[in-house]
Length: 319
Image (cartoon, rainbow, N blue to C red; front, side, top):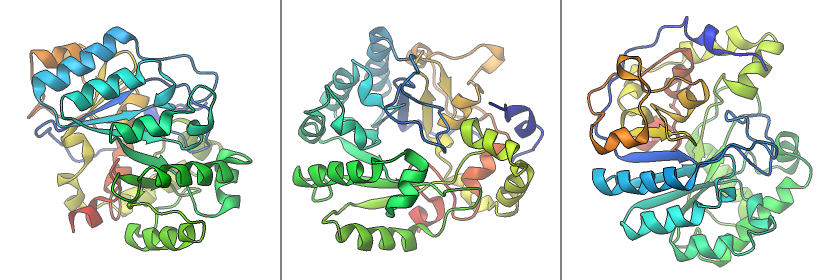
């Protein structure tokens, strides 16, 4: 796989500093039951990295000590970590809003038969990846049979109250090296198409593809890397800088080390004041507010056009 970091580090990006920490985004491991082309984590069934029980305990300690209101759990398929449910229960007992970034097909995996019921019981907010509402597009990106499996999972979640009181949001990524379309327009298309399958959901989050990991390597191999970066830079809007997710979020890897965002985590651009990596444990004694954020060329993926974040488009969200 081609490393994009040396190319990205040459591209200047406006300086940013951290604001108040509101969300802890925790990666429980890179193992996943899928291997998606656009996956910036390079997750898959053969990955073995996963967060240890002791580190999960530190996550709960930090949520409690820092009174952080949001826990965003990701992976891989985070549900495959044996301590996923312990973390969810612990965070919910603290009154923390928990988000599970779910690939939907995990609900059909052996050992996960009661996962949907567990999520509903704990009132976990689900952000479910569904890259398109068309079968061919989904299966081109995720594999044969994934579309039908995703629809079955969505119907099951609907039956438990998701999309009807419990929060169910979907995620869209473009198929290739283009900016995503208008979030509001595409959300209306998704709702119209999925209604035909008897499925409802709350919001659609439209995310730009980041030029890192599998996607970045593919851009390089096709000779499209420079063109895509130029596309992102030309569409940059300074107004999006105030709303980028890295100002109020910390990304934590499976070992407990901290990053300004999930994308920096995949590039190994750790939060490291004075050259020393910060571990989650350090948050028990120190704050990050006001510290500089590590930036490079990939950051234009968050500020191009309508903007892009873990919560979807920045511009439309602000409006």
